[in-house]
Image (cartoon, rainbow, N blue to C red; front, side, top):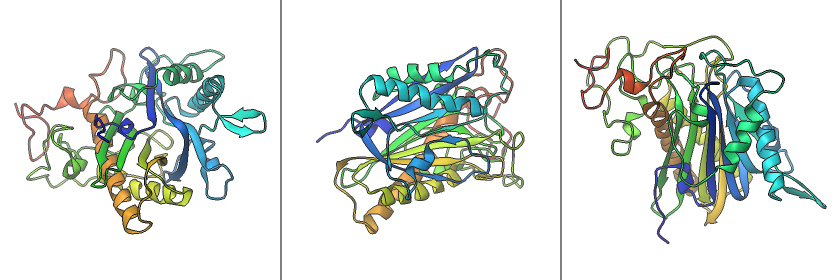
Length: 347
């Protein structure tokens, strides 16, 4: 069977993604929805997590599946996004069957974007539940990346963050995809240059094709950090078309965390709320439980690293009233070339 490749997580058959954001709010929501209940697991690593219903995916849990996953701005206020998706799914008759009742299982995680200059005076009701319903209703196999959804208000240490995605097809036809809302305490670029830490894993020119710098500079490994505790995170989902058990999905999430380490420097700090969800649609055969799963996890890590870089590379120029760093494309240009020592675009 020939499958269309868009370099998005929705290249994995059985998945849709929807985004909704408010430019005045400077925040938004992203939702991933499965055509069927998804075998799912989660691997949290950051020091400042904000999640909902993620415990339902733990190995000790009974359900071990999800109908959708939400990624939201708004810090703890954004946890309401899962409620919006849950109610929307319930209206479609989707959910975990408990006799005659149906309860959609919607884990979610949030990132902090409350200080980026948007109007956060929303009164009695935070807007994230309504944004999530819009995102769910718009979910499709094609979606935009960059300054959209949960990535709209995101930042990194030096540049505007964003929503990134990527995919890879293995030799046996199994598809792996990744989705990331990129809002880390650290940086995704090397030193003060526009070169991405994830350059070694880039496919073509999906984030500029700049490669690694020839001479990165003496201070390239100096950590560049933003903000204070609780202000940063990368929220990620990796997905595969392979049939996985819950334990194998957890191993996939664990291996995929390496992708964050390849794309963000530093990562998993006390300032971050990093989490990776892993989902399996099961439309393809299961992998060999050792070598096959190892190859799958390796591809997931590489794909997640690429998704992180794409989220920053695709970010739009900052809007009026923005409080935070500029977008990559406002600072660097692949056409101009990048100073290999660091320090920005060549004149």
